[in-house]
Length: 80
Image 1: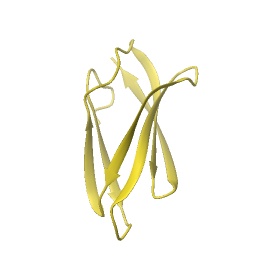
Image 2: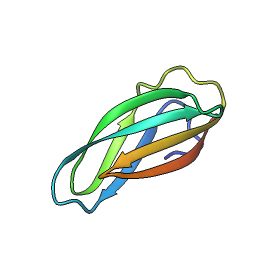
Image 3: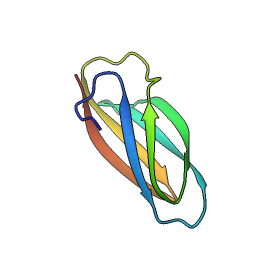
């Protein structure tokens, strides 16, 4: 959130794992090219990750892919 976004994204992750894990987030453009990636430290329960260091992005559709505990979630997001 927010979606659509302007400069910053926040990712809320709910983890059922019993321990801290090191995972990652990736951002792809509409053509499927990877334009951003970052490692995440996910703790059991709820974790909110603030992403403020995104590259300059044009307005449009992007795909946010989050890997947590061996599972992958992809979300379509819109940059205003």
